[in-house]
Length: 181
Image (tube, rainbow, N blue to C red; front, side, top):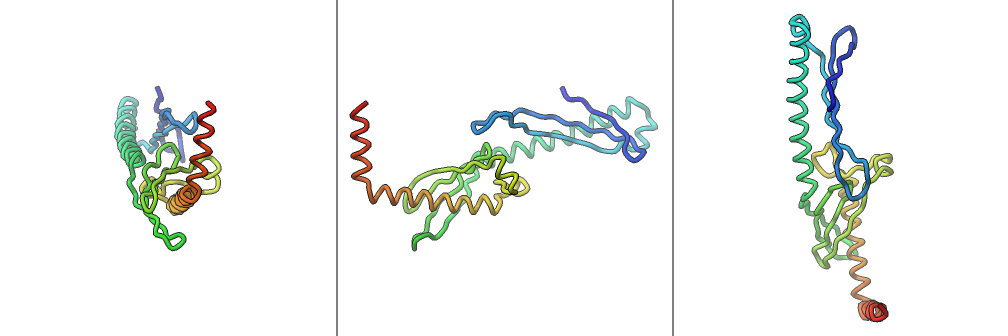
């Protein structure tokens, strides 16, 4: 169980608290949600003694961590089903779709018109290093994510268009391969 740590900063008494919760993921291991709180202890509380200091710090931590956990829960719910409409014009065609998930550092997009299909892109360590994230301030999709979503719509469209063009040959190859199993 994490504990509250006390320290001196600029001649004043401060506390800090950090809690890490492991998050199960599909894309990678060792993902953690971090909750933390830190604040200066007011002089009037210090005058009341050690128990008052501990009580003050505990109350501040509980209030702040509870608020952070509620916010994180809302963000996770949004990420599971953002239902964000996305469209782009490509090859004189309006491609309509939506972002259907942003969980687990993975942006999943579904093309709804003129074809149907779904694909995703993973925002991993390299994306973060280059400053590309799915969310901006954990409140809305970043420009990078929206650009990726539009690019994914185009990729789905091109794949479906290719399949429609060569459907007979693709289906025949699949049928021949299945018959050998």
